[in-house]
Image 1 (spheres, rainbow, N blue to C red):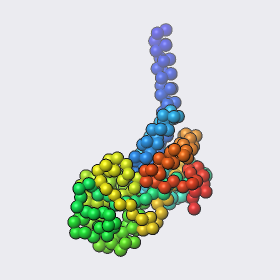
Image 2: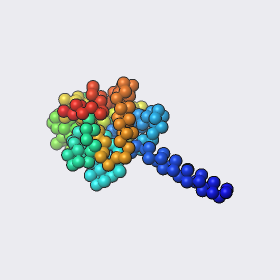
Image 3: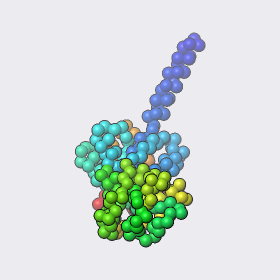
Image 4: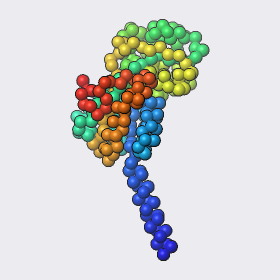
Length: 264
């Protein structure tokens, strides 16, 4: 009888464990969201009990992974194009494509640096600037924005040989934070987050210098957690969460996730 009870307890524990695992939302998120989403997901988990597994990286790499069957429930891209392509390929839950934020970029240098970044992008032509960190424009929207801004100020050809490419915007930030680059063109959302905020100074690049970084989200058709995905997207619409995102360098549109009209 004791053995039977033990077996029953083990089976029940296994079932409960499986149920708990089933309540985990797997989120692929652009690297500029690293600080913001760690806090937002912690608040969501505390309120709902649902775990959020965050994976950060470049939007282009996530796009390729999802095309090849990567097991994510929700994809927060740093631009609209990648989610739109997934939608066109039939990999997205219908009606879930929406814009959740617009990103901004900034120059960042470590405190004590002799480089005066308050002069803007023209600072980068200074001979003392030997390495400039940006995200790889091949698959990172923030890298493309950086290149566009450099071209706008007509300094790209002068500094292109000094560019150091991070796999994503988070790695680009690590390069300049560690001293492997003298200055970086980074996501404002990372610049305003610890530890960069306390370790350096920044100059926000005018948004007129580069195409809008309109960031979009989709729920994937293959997701088994669509209800939780809807809860999470609804959670992001709350005024206090939207304000938290705004205070950390992201421009939040009036129409929030879950409202299709946010996409132009």
